[in-house]
Length: 148
Image (cartoon, rainbow, N blue to C red; front, side):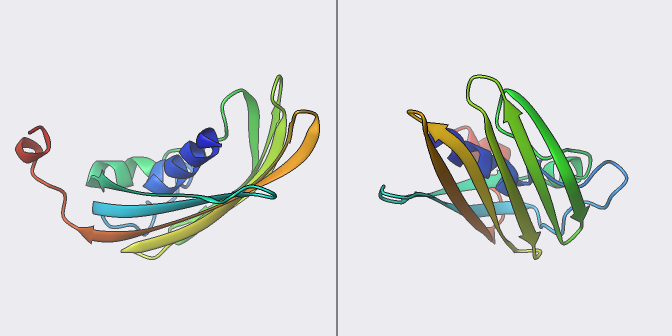
């Protein structure tokens, strides 16, 4: 379910936020530590923690982005957003049909959210529950230090 974790990363890293006329999310730029947990019944949970620099520009750009649904023939609906959070549903057709919903809450120096995905694997229905959280841990390294 690495693809599901990537969806969480996109959402959690502020690439999914409010429509163009809305405020930017209540998220501070800086170095963030982000933890993802992906759970599927009958399997061990996958947990991944990583660090990512979020620039002021990325926070501003998030205000004009739409939530990222999984790749494919997908539509996002019921999208509601404020500076404090967002929620949405999605429906994907095609070779790997799936439906789901998600939400995220921003609190300046932290955030948390969850996504539920219903799909099929080997002809059997499965539910993938993802949770993600982030905490700002400091400032980003200067650009020169990041390239070394």
